[in-house]
Amino acid sequence: MNRGNYPSCRWRILSQIGVLTAIALTGALGAPAQTKPRAQSSTANSDEIATPGKSIGNRGAPITMEVFSDYQCPSCGNFYESTLKYMITDYVAAGKVYFIHRDFPLPMHPYSHQAARWSNAAAKIGKFQEVDAALFDNQAAWSADGNIEKFVAAALKPADFKRVQRLMVGCESNTSAAVKPASLSGKGQADRGCALDIYIEQDQALARLLPVSQTPTSVITYKGQRYPAMPGFVTWPILKSFLDSLLSQ
Image 1: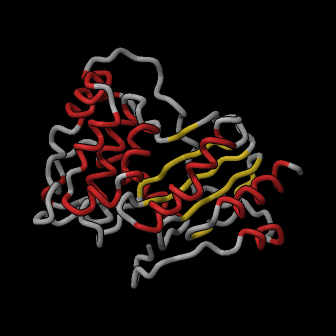
Image 2: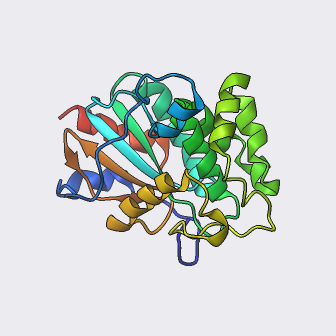
């Protein structure tokens, strides 16, 4: 979604990337997040200390793909279901691509910020992939009433869900349509008590450096070389063709 008039967006045709100058966006993005948090006990305290690992795959893969996304954005949901899911099953699983999710909830979507909180809480206990999939797979359902917890619970084992619930203490606001979403800066009066918001704010800070103007927006890095940010949706066949062209170099 575009942050201006929020029209439906399509990615620039990726075949054009082959003629782009491979200029790294120096300093635009931080180091890739870890695939999984460091080994730790299952205590509430260690969960609170852990940094969310909002990534899937081997961070040593030759290609890194970072996607700035809004869980309630229809274009983001379509991108996940039609493209990213296939990439994760194939190229990420094969060690060719390292996938990183970046949170960029838009103020027009009343539940997107809350969904990002649930995702970060799950990532802190090493369950990002399960909850990320559940949020996008059920986007239409929880977008209607804000009942995100139901789908997070269904995606996790009971013990893991209890750990996620503990991390969500203080983050209960913005769970109904009557509550306004947090601003992009994450400084809403009702949301200052949520410890998870700092991770969303960190992703938003990276987005401002690019800058990101709509969701989804993707950044591809090949062997340390970052390509310009690409906004919008792209089909899996086109993305696959581009990834193959990089891997063949």
